[in-house]
Length: 167
Image (cartoon, helix red, strand yellow):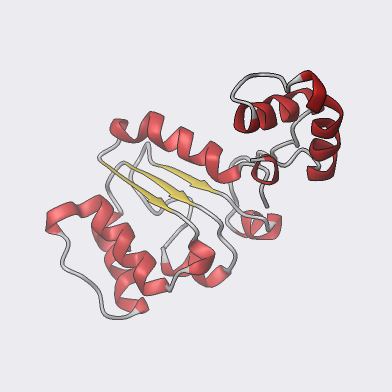
């Protein structure tokens, strides 16, 4: 956690969501109830045509029936269970041609279950990048004040190059 998976996924979503018939960014999936996720997903894509679901099975059926032919962009952030995959009807052929599904997860095993096309691990930041990020937040410039360079290096080392910890 904290390496920047959500930030990268948001940047991709924000850049490309207008190129699809519908788009949904399901953030912090691990923390939400399945029916709530289904409701958000359907609502994001169907907009005013969406009515609502009352149970998980109904939601899964609605997703399969109503979104199966659309060209959609879906980001599922922080996936952590097979139940979430099933409830959101996420399979390689779930949606219409040209659709894209982006999944962030701390669990590589779930990505293998999904049979994803590509896994893109995010590397930790270099010391230079981490120092720059810390400096931007702490000093509002690209490099720390001279009297804080050593302390900044220690702080960055302690954070292990994780952007969330640094900010």
